[in-house]
Amino acid sequence: MEKAHLVKKNLPDAPGVYFFLGVRKKILYIGKATSLKNRVRSYFAIDLKEKRSELIEKMVAEAVDIECTRTDSVLEALILETNLIRTHKPYYNTRSKDDKSYNHLIITNETWPRVLVVRGKDLSEKYTEQEIKSHFGPFPSGSSLREALKIVRKLFRFYDTSVSIDKAKSKLTKGIIDFNRQIGLYPDQVSKTEYARTIKHLILFFEGKKSQIIAELEKEMMRCAKREEFEAAHNMKKRIFALQHIQDVALIKDDTRVYRDEKRIRIEAYDIAHMQGKDMVGVMTVIESGEPARDAYRKFNVKTVAGANDPAALKEVLSRRFTHTEWAQPQIVVVDGSTAQKNVAEQVLKEYGLVIPVVAVVKDDHHKPIRLIGQKALLSVHQQSILHANAESHRFAITYHRQKRRKLF
Image 1 (cartoon, one colour):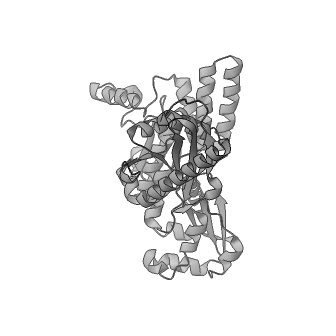
Image 2 (tube, helix red, strand yellow):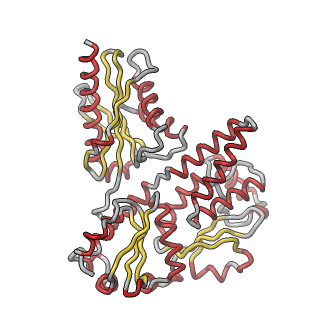
Image 3 (cartoon, rainbow, N blue to C red):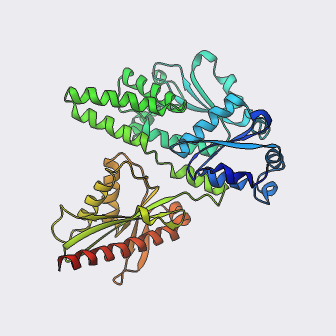
């Protein structure tokens, strides 16, 4: 297959799964991508053999067409890829590695089902068919599966103890369970019925049926609202929002370590401008793939804050921004300020059920960056884009504030 064939395909710059097809639409290879456009393009590089393998080079030469399926997130692309490979068993996927060394995800058939990662070679030796409720995999990348489960845990709390919950008698095991409940990894004293529903939703999620989960949660939310159980309805709403806006920056980073031309990271930066507390405004600027996305910039008139209170103004701006579920979600949030601004941003994100890393840019008296507060791994990869986004937000905020003051004069 020649690179010129890609021009006709118009592949999207979005997560999803791609298929290399041979004659008579035979599936030769299935892969996932952070950006379908960039990933497929990488297969037509001159040094493909050195970057990937002779086998993949042969696959591309044999292919006559490419198709793709778009997903809402990289996490869902990973799950869809795994399900499709298991169903179709494409020749060039199965040739690349011994299946017994892959990781599999199983859900045990117990009163309190556990979610466990098991090596292919241990699957049949340690568990019978009757002991397994559901089985997903194989997952070619163990690191991606581990990162995926960290994200899934924020949506569904499940047990992964080495022994059955009913058999967890020792003080050490009970202590581990209590500790994991406190830090939000295990369910917090739920009933068997509630936990069974969580496991049902978890299975649906790994089957690629997210829309079915959301439909069930929406019905339950309406029932709770009619019964005036408003706290329960609000919790349902937060779960729906979290499912609709899955944050998988860890998987995106994992993807970019392999394919350096794929940097589909959206960074949103926020800044507040005012004159001694008067005419206060806030702005949002966006950097995507290292470039300003000016169509996505937003302006906010601060309405609820009196006096020079930047953290309170930032809280209002962020709260208003995240009510806009139709806007694309960021993978990194950047705030101008220090720990106070960072804490405010993290508080707002928590209220909306979002897990997005926050970076604060600390300035000197001349408004020059002197240090960044945030995850070290994130800063080492995206420092320049973070500083770029922050500089844009400061420039945009000052410009907007001056425009507003001119109008008032």
